[in-house]
Image (cartoon, helix red, strand yellow):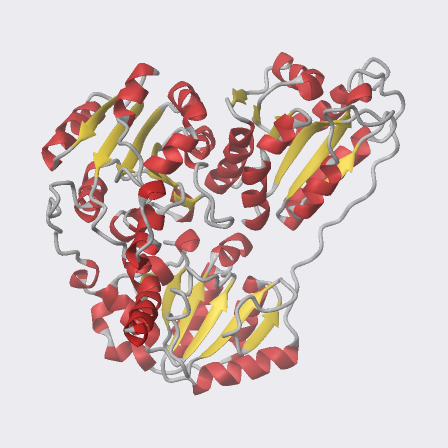
Length: 555
């Protein structure tokens, strides 16, 4: 019944049927909507910046697989959310974002064309009316869930408190069935797999979502393949023949094996520049087969593209290939040996007296609780934790900002992850630049994270720019940041913490963990600028070589 409900209430009623939590920041455009949800007792997590609301909902889904609702007001509230919204769109994170909108009578001086802006981000908007609010909001939830993307529900300001009245009947929406591969394509790919001497199966997040892991392992076992995963699909394959993370976070020994494959079957991975280690992950003569439900391949190295569901294709291929005895695996028993994944302890300090981030990451792996959700912001520092710290499952490590190459979303994302998995310790990994950008929601983290550790790799710089541009001779004035003590900032807001200048300072964190690990602990780690992550060094090597050659030619 809607005779006593306004339009905002109707939208809220639908959202309450689908969501277990709402992340929001209230303003004029979403006040009635938010009031409905909070009055009914739906858990409401308030961000302190609108980008935080979307980043929280994004991370909530990545950690739990459940879709959340985010809400912001119109105008400046909407534009403040755009970076996080673009990240969600490019990462294919489903959510429903309820926003205020200009009145139906026409824009006011402070209104903008929000539909046009959202369209430019690749995000669709459904603008409700008094008669269709229920139908369109249900459609938004359906689309977000089944097409894995954010959808905006927009409420015009003059309708927000307008009586809804009778609602249009809801459409009977049916999800599309998983796309099965063409039989001829399966036969062709199976023949390629059976001819390969050194096959590698690379599983991405798309294979996790489609549930393809078991079928991929069955296929790999039949052809004697080795396996690797994207960082987002880490630990998704139940096999001792998993080489670990491919791309920028791969360790040296397994990376060399990946590069020696003569065929790589890629299931549900985007093959972006970082994932392919800037084009160096595959041997020059390796065949690359990509399985994805997209319309076309996402990398020019792909020699055969299969537009289909990863699980359906893996099952079909497992039935079509001819089993081999051992294959490539018989040459590499070290894949299952404990020494294969062993790390040589790094030095504690760099030449400048600041900490080596590799050593800190190695120590954190041993100190932090095993049941943890690692939330990584973007930046140069993101090279340390995935290489040296374990995650319990694919949902236990998320890389926020990487889809859009942004920084500053980590702090609110940690809040969303903690709300999704309060049973785990939330571990936020940030750089000083991104942490400063997101300081508004440090208060949110202190307030909403029941048990979390915020680790700031603090090199007093925008590290990625230092290693990409100062290394090429550019003046680094704009790349440096006066050093901030984030532990002091956290303590001022109610957290505990310590400024870490030696490994001995980790004792303070150990004591906090032993005492019950309640609330947020901020570990500000004074790391060196001189240590360059493997992925960054490798990507910059040809550029620096070209610069050197150009200087030599100029004399």
